[in-house]
Length: 311
Image 1 (cartoon, rainbow, N blue to C red):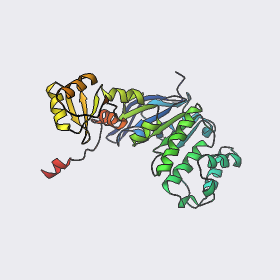
Image 2: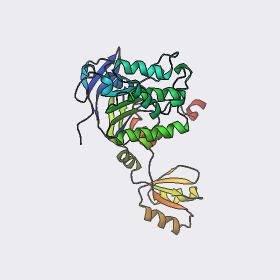
Image 3: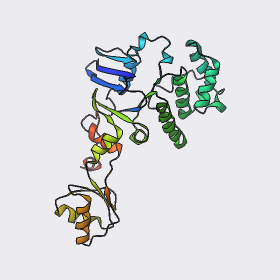
């Protein structure tokens, strides 16, 4: 694999009695969209701020192309970032906001117009950014991240505030940036979006990495060779399969997940017991299922279930 675009090693940081980072270590590589996920308090935002030199740590290093951010000359040419879509002057037009950033890095007005077009804001470029929706501000923040045509892009929760059209655009756009050979590092709480966007996933919990793997590999592991069954007689099917030693879990009103039996054995048992079914296939977990399983013990706050509330 190529040398890492971002290398995070052994980060430790404490806020008072809270251990925000507890040995956080991972790498982000060119040509991939790397998702960064984890529950609230996992240390995601703190890690991104450390990478960009905005927060100091007690231990560890965070390097961009082998160097600390603070040592980069014209940093927008190395890494573009969006940490807060609201970080703009509301009375400036979007174009003037970008012109101000471009001027600070010796970039041209022509480059400003190019990135405005890239993110689909040409028709709104001369409107005051304070009147932008959150989705439009996200696009403006991404335009700012692209100004220096950097090989590394870092985005914190870029799907927030996006309408369905914007989400579809964002998925394709991030993938296209990686296809150009850039390293794309994206934090998100929306597992459905990372499942359709990211190639690789880093999952954090309580200040450290709990998983660092391909999205496909994580989903395969979470699927655990289970069988997906669709039947109009769910109760009968569950009883027959459980009697044969399977672990059976109801999914939807007509769906069952089966562990412990191969698909052909499931089919035989159902046919022998005259239980109707419409589908028996390999079960494929969602990224959200895999994520929830990984972070079950790392969630800071747990809501009570309805049964617990009613007691």
